[in-house]
Image (cartoon, rainbow, N blue to C red; front, top):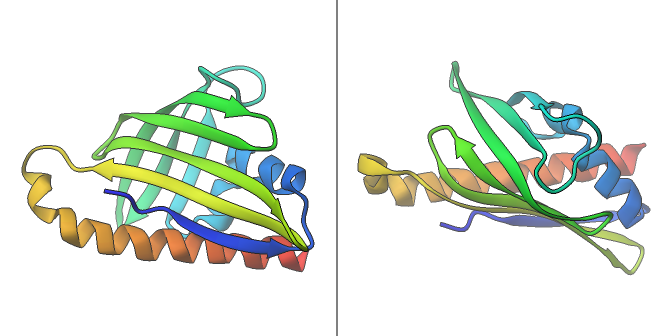
Length: 144
């Protein structure tokens, strides 16, 4: 299920937005449920970089591992989930628009096993969370 969300950020460049979102330690600053995010490989993010993100799901910490599968500096980073409760892919895409940047948080995920039954509910929640996250990112970057 696709739970992607986009937002236009005024007064920023693609380079600034891309730099901010690919510094994984920034994730808890703009993703509202995120408690920790770490890059486990040496150096900056790139293809084959691995890391994990941890989120608070109503008092329960959920950890998801990921591996970067595609990366183009200042344009996009895409990854595959390697562990955790969801299966799927995600990514960040930035593109210049009049007066700023369009940022898209891409997510195409599913719950394996019996979680398939919860798919419609998970989609609604995921869409709301991702819209709130990109809105929070917009507020942070436009106030700097």
